[in-house]
Amino acid sequence: YTAKQAREIFDILDSNHDGKVSKLEFEANKIDAFYFRDRKNPQDPRLRFEDTGLSREFFDQADEGHKGYLTGLDLVDAIHFEAIDATHHGYFDFAQFVAALKTISR
Image 1: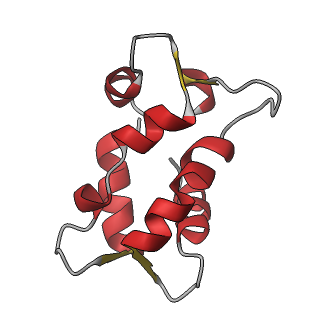
Image 2: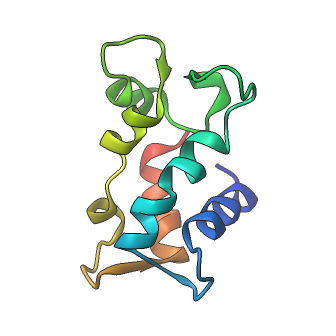
């Protein structure tokens, strides 16, 4: 993901725009941030590798059943708040988000 894309995703997650994403915000917004944001065809529920900024390794791990695409449920199961909140403060900021994003992106 580019810096601009990371900011766009973070802004979707940070719904109250306080510069921090709480677990509640993350759980409420992660499908919009990681799934709906990248889908090219709103009629097609499949999110293909080419449509994402995810690494092949992460995409393949998230792809339950190895279908060749991700669903919203696949992403709910694959991306966890605790993996981003490295300091365990109950929230993460943009810098923490970028660091975590680098571990799953190409």
